[in-house]
Amino acid sequence: MEIVIKQNHGQVTVFLKGHMDSAAAAEVKNELSKRLVLCGLINRLTCDARELTYISSSGLRIMLQLSKSYPHFSIIEVQPDVYNVFDLTGFTKIMTIERALRQITVNEKDVIGSGGVGTVYRISDDTIIKVFREGTTIDQVQNEIAMAKEAFVLGMPTAISFDVVRVGNQYGLVYELLNAETLSTCVKQHPDNIDEYARKYASLFRQMHRIHVPQHSTIPDAMAREEAAVRHISRYFDTRSVDLMLQIICSIPPCDRLLHCDLQSKNAMMQGNELMLIDMGEVGFGHPLLDLGHAYSAMVTLVGDYDQIIGMPRDYGKLLWEKMIAYYFEGCTPAAIDHRNAQIDAVSTVRNFSWLALSDSFPEKVIRECQELFDERIYKRRDYLLAISRTFSDWTL
Image (tube, rainbow, N blue to C red; front, side, top):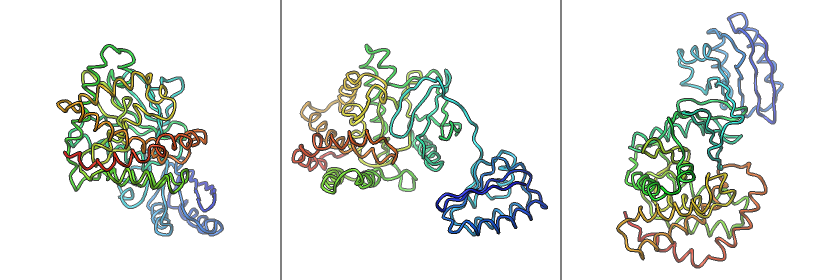
C-alpha cells in the first residue's frame, strides 16, 4: 500500500494506492495515525480511492474510525469492485462515498446552450450532456437528478438523466433524448412554425402551474430560495439596492404550485410532438408569477450574449414569448393581459441580477455589466416597480 497526503488550509486528502488487505491495513492505520496529527487542524478529510484495488474488513474498520474522528469525512473516486464492498456492508448509508465516474470529452461537440450553471452539448444523435460549472458539487448534481424525478412523478414530461460523468474536473449529466432539439433550435430552424411552438410552450407552463406540490415533497420553497439569492448578491450591490429587490420579491403571494424557475426555450426539448423539461436544478414550489418572471428575464431582458445563452436571435425569442404569454392567458381581456405582463416584468427585473447567486465564479466583466444596468432597470423605475408589486396580491389562482 502507498499513502500520499496533501493538505490545503485545513482540507486534507489522503490518496490510497494498492491492495488494503489485513496485513496492509495495520500499516495504513499506524501511518495515518502519525501523519494526520502532523497536519494540525483538519476541517475536512477526504480519502481519494481511485487507485485502491481492494479493501478488507480491517480496512473498513479504519474508514469507520476516520468517519467518527472527522465529521466532514468522505471517500471519493471509488472503483466499482471496491464500491460494491462499501455498498454491501452498508457503509454507503452511514458516510459519504462517491463512486468513480467515467470520463468523457466534449471537444468539438455542438453546444446546445449555456447559462449560469453550465453548458449543454449534443454528444450523439440521441444523447445530450449538461456540463456543470467548475466548483459544482456532487450534492448539487444529485439534487438536480432528484428534482427531475420528483417533477416526473408529479406529472411533468421531464427528461431523466441516466448517468453522472466527469468532463475533465467538472461533473456532467447525460440524457437520452431521441431525435430531440431544444425549443430554441426549432424556432431558429423553422420560424414559420413559431405560433405552434408558442402554443406548446404555453401549454407546458400551464401544465406545470396546475400542479400542487404536496407538503411531504422534497421540492424546495422557490420564494425562500429567491430571497436568499438576493441576500447573497449583497456582495455586489449596496444595502439600498438589495432592500429594493427584496421589497419587490416579498410582495409575491405564497402558493404551492410547481415551478421550473428557469424555463427559457433552451430548457425545453422537442421530442416528437412533445416538449420535455431539462435543467431541473432550480425547481421549486411557489406562485407562477415567480416562474414567469424568471423566464421573461431570460427570454426578453437577458443580460449577456443572447444568441449564445438562449440559442437563437433575440427578436425570435421576444416574439416567441409574446405569443406564448398570449396563449398562457388565453381568454383574458387585453387589459388584463397587459396588467399581468407588467407584474411579470417587475419580477423579472430582480431575476436580472439574482441569478448571480448561482455561482461565485462569474467573470468580473459580467458582474460589472449587471451593476451598471441596475440603476437603469430597477432604481430609476423604483416608484413604478413598487406600485406594480403592490398589485401582486390580485393574481389569484
